[in-house]
Amino acid sequence: MAVQFGYSINKSNTIDMDTAPRAMESYLLLHEPSFARCIGCGCCTATCSSGVFTQLNLRQIQLRIRRGETQGLLPEIQKCMLCGKCQMVCPRGVSTRNVVLSIQRALQLLS
Ligand code: SF4
Ligand code: SF4
Image (cartoon, rainbow, N blue to C red; front, side):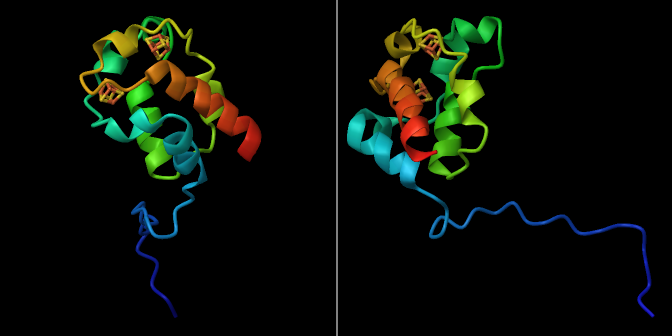
């Protein structure tokens, strides 16, 4: 009889990048190549106008796309006001407004 110790082992959250869905990332790299230059510094998130009122986190959204975790992105990306402030502070010259617009288009096309 199996002994129940009262705990369980959590499923590993390791991402297998060889099998993770990359369609969204490929779409962005094609339509906004500057997406590849993002180093995840977070300056965009720190200055985000919408971030003052919402939990919008562009750095995290870009990271999730790289990891193939695109579930639930639409309500997040819809919080962006396209003000362009993040683009002005990005040290890597990422065209963040077009990244946001491309994510919105990709969500329509790929869903
Ligand atoms: S500021 Fe630019 S480089 Fe930094 S996380 Fe945002 S998009 Fe990436
Ligand atoms: S364009 Fe969107 S993500 Fe960038 S600062 Fe403005 S509201 Fe935030």
